[in-house]
Image (cartoon, rainbow, N blue to C red; front, side, top):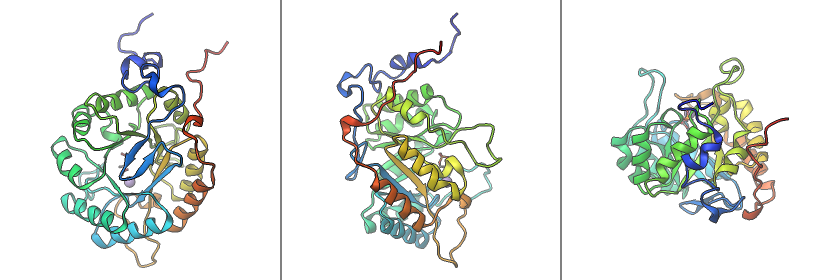
Length: 305
Ligand code: PEP
Ligand code: MN
């Protein structure tokens, strides 16, 4: 029986011919395409760690955290200048001023920076200040935005929609690739599940890491901060993601000074620079990937008998 509109993993090579291993034999069965952002190599020999505040709240706060994450060994800086908030009455980010602060923090620390863009009208502006554009979970299926990000010429960090299937996620990536931009890194950030709000914010879908890697040659990273929403779970989630073959992590960090202001956004999931350092030590203690040896699960599995 054919159900109209049904999306099936077997359709993936048709949905994402530019990104599917099956249609781009150059990447073979287990090769990852290395995406370079200011010298940082996603999909290379070592997982990449991106860290920084949820939101850019002030110059002082951002510079302090940028220096701290650099000191902890992070490879890249994150921070939202434009924030997607559930309530329009909550802090929406500093906008252009926030981008300028991020640029300054990036120049001072030497860390390339990623920041979210939510609006097609702002792609050019955000791209002028950052090294990598982030498409957030809520915008994963904003097709005009994906097209503009594809045309920007910047690498794109594509978060998975919180209720998106693998097909939908890779279809979204294909919109970027279709504009001639293959500099795409996928990011699993937790999905909606029964437990949401009971003991965690979202549910980290570890299983999607090898599944996505089996379908596409793009690097796949994990955001353990939004996936859990609980600072004490972030370290374990990070380790688990690395064990599942993630090519990197993006982690929210706050100041550990006793007199520091509480973050205005996602305070409950922010870790300290000291915890970040432990996570990075763990990442560095793992054997380096030989690109041809990256583990790829044979997926989809044969039907159960
Ligand atoms: C973020 O990274 O700041 C963010 C809002 O993430 P997500 O889009 O995954 O919710
Ligand atoms: Mn956040």
